[in-house]
Length: 213
Image 1 (cartoon, helix red, strand yellow):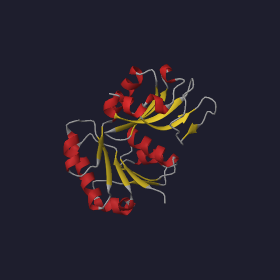
Image 2 (cartoon, helix red, strand yellow):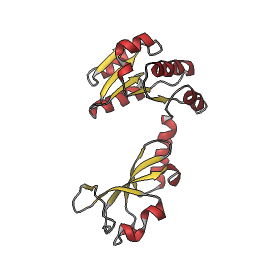
Image 3 (cartoon, helix red, strand yellow):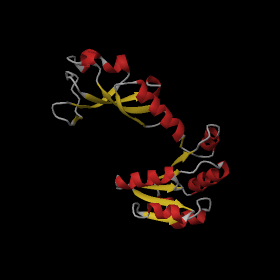
Image 4 (cartoon, rainbow, N blue to C red):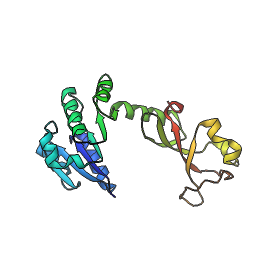
């Protein structure tokens, strides 16, 4: 069964999220008060809607109550965001993700019902810093406040040694998800602890944020 996500607020952040979700096969309800913002995503998402998410009747008419997840993509004005969260909770939306630019707002937004609060500028800054600080990190994806997924070029001292021999989980705190061998150019998801790393191998790992900050 396909997931339905409501994206409320279609500025640069919201429209990017809506389009990306739609490209990945998610049913998207994309909602904004400004029609020009709605038109921006009209050709990409399942249901583009001009509406005010602070008005619960307009959310109901747009079908937002049936969404599995709702994302509030405008976080500049605290009172508007709070009204949006409260309306979503009244409609029974279980997961409410909120964008904000203000670190001080995070605790307030969590208390009124947000399940996750993101600060894109902070998170993109952390991501860039981590990438620049580690020559081995190819890509990084933050899952939540506790974990990242990293794509890593293996260090030279791993070459010729097995996963078991290196004791990667204990020594590095990495849980290996997949390995891309230079020989196959594809990710191997069935991990053999006896796998011996080869030059130019790439690994996909899950790691706690504290290990890479």
